[in-house]
Image 1: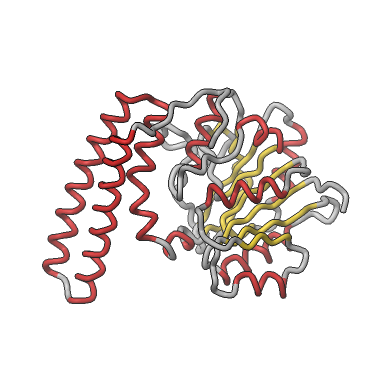
Image 2: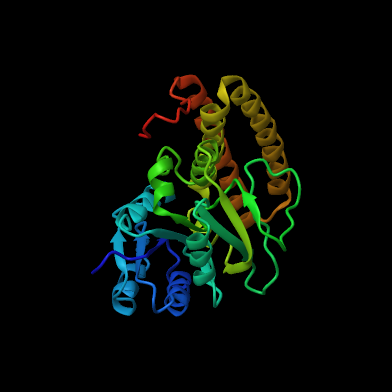
Length: 305
């Protein structure tokens, strides 16, 4: 196969029917004159996803992982598999492309060589706009009806030049679930890369479908992940302040859940207590990380582990 112009990289975990819809939408929207490679990285779903893709989407390059090491590892695998493409479209498995999504993104990048990537609006399945973060420090609501520069770009829906990944480097695999795209965005912004929001482009997002399948371990990683990020980019003083804020937030959240559990029925009480245990695990991991001396500081010339 000749080098594709576009690599479409999708990561999935236990979202078989959603990734089917995602792939159908990609298949329908790919312009016939654009050579493309579709790459799906399955994080050990064991729900029939692998078999479904092999049977129904034979054109897909499938990477079936033996275990779930998180999105950062999986997206790195997918981007590496599409390294010969000029552009990379990253999608969550719970995304459905609307007709006419891919070509405007490609055209914009072709005609704006100073732009490293483009993104569009996320919509709920009923067509209403969905909340989305587009700035690392988002102080005010963007004007969604016009193009603007975005500093936060999510793996949920982003088309970027291959050179962007070469310059910024891979996603930091120290993150299990949260903040791998925030970390990459921070590095990209500090290196001067430009990403543009296109108001005419949008996709349907079945929000957090994959996260729901692994919610407990993900929540246990949230707070140490946040501490890692703050220390890496803003230093130990800011990291300490962030950790104190997170400890207060955790204390209040645990008290609120305890009150709800006391008034709940047996099934709901068990669910809330399980959630509390995961949050306590996250607190313990954050404090252990703070004591470990293994928190990083970012340098532009420093390779990621």
